[in-house]
Length: 144
Image (cartoon, rainbow, N blue to C red):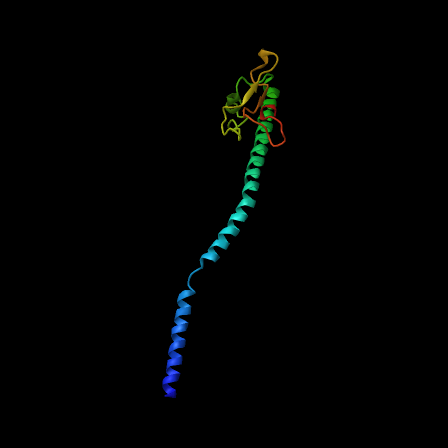
């Protein structure tokens, strides 16, 4: 009799252990909801910063592209005594590898060309961005 009671208790423990193991392989709905809430909170904090940094980097690239193209125009004028007729002249005469992209418009054809006051001095005195809108500091891209 004692032996049978001990066997029953052991049998019950084995069954209880198997049931406990069976339920411990997954996550509960509450655990999944808590994890999803934490992820959503982190994304709401990180997303605005990401897009702000993208705009900031585009403006930095635009300033650098304008500076390098203006430098090439000045070097062209210093070597030839006149300004280039088009931006492509800077590429053909090897002052630039290629006409830089305007990172705001993602195009190399949207540059606004400022001609010199005297037409016989060439066609490109300065360039400006053709991007619409304003920068983060409030200035218009076309005024850069």
